[in-house]
Image (cartoon, rainbow, N blue to C red):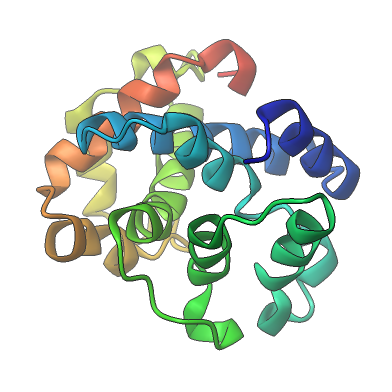
Length: 189
């Protein structure tokens, strides 16, 4: 399996926007926490999926049918062979790129948590200190229910955590929030 240093190099080669890089770090942290929740032993694999799920975004933003698929190509070229990693990265955009719908906890986790990290960042940015340490589960839940707040966040995608992962929404938010708070320095929040 690809190591984190190599994955980080791929991310930095293809993503120049610092906010998109931080998004990858946020999803990586959340994915590792979700791996722990599920008792997975290969937390690094889950982290790699989170780190690289949007690695091709800057190159595919005008061709969303390729989003996720380019990253899989880059991983294959780098020597990665893990089909679960490929399926999870491609599957987080399955409705637009024609790949298979997620079918396991790894794939559904990245699909559901991707949007949630953005909502949590937005919740932090409206705090006076603009820090994740000021964000609470309750404040995220309140913002979650305000559709005008971070209107681009697909709340239905996040809520699939309940049906597809068996994790109640408040618990899913808590796991994600705490994982992001744990790397708040790297996220600049």
